[in-house]
Length: 370
Image 1 (cartoon, rainbow, N blue to C red):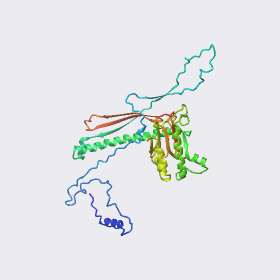
Image 2 (cartoon, rainbow, N blue to C red):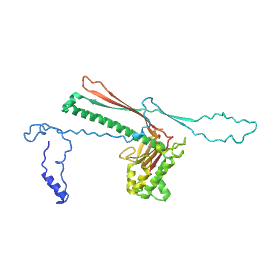
Image 3 (cartoon, one colour):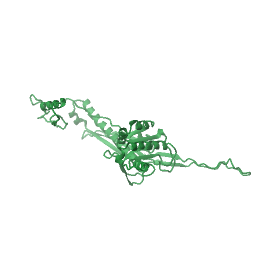
Image 4 (cartoon, helix red, strand yellow):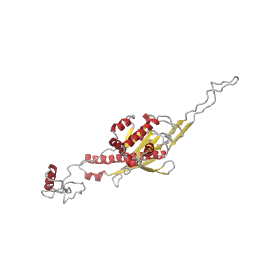
């Protein structure tokens, strides 16, 4: 263990802290340990005899559970079967009432067949992947002083596998959301707030300057809340238009880019944002980035429908039906091999399998700063 006399650092730090001297650079290289030392039998010895090896006094098993931020995408958990079937029936159209305008000698046929018109979607894509870890207990024993200590280490290893699984589920959830946004495309399902605001007010804002304009931010709140109201009515404007649909508040999800939310909090009076959104049945949530952390407001993928390239930027919010996209199957199988007699190790496998879907017949509206 390195021993560094730091009385000069102590005196300098105290003088600066109490105001006896102005701020000057203090070299912390001899003060702070960065944990990059490899133990050595000739240098890591006690300071009296310089012979006996210093001991590790405490081990911190650093582990924290990582929570998947897209757990709400799970729309059903199937243990049996493989295919998700979704059936919708068209609403009938009105026709003339035959009770009026009856003719003598002419019968009205009340057995005319009017079959319901049904639409079926089958979601059949399966997306497996796996993780594995090798454990060799016999040689690993040499690094620990008890079975309990080694057990804590192995639990740490398996805990990080669980975190890797959660992070994978979250990342794939982001891609599912990005795929749903790409299918909405440049239609009435995409609202370019800056363009609309400039048209309505004669302004010349850009995506960058709009974030500093309180009037625009209030306008953005109005447009988002207006869509929240509008998609509760039957309409073909906010889906693929094949069948009219609606989304009530109980089945509505609102995802807002956290940077945009913070901008609303700091530029616009906080209550104007907070009171409006959190009243939506607890369905409001923030997201730090849509696909990649380095470009939080952008997506860049190939569309699942036709494989064409799709990119979009300045996305700040998405309002959608709970069934517009999601995960419909969670199957995790954990298997452990027998111990390899020659190498004295075993492998543990985590087999993951989910199905992800995007249903363009459900409501989804994208808001951008474009």
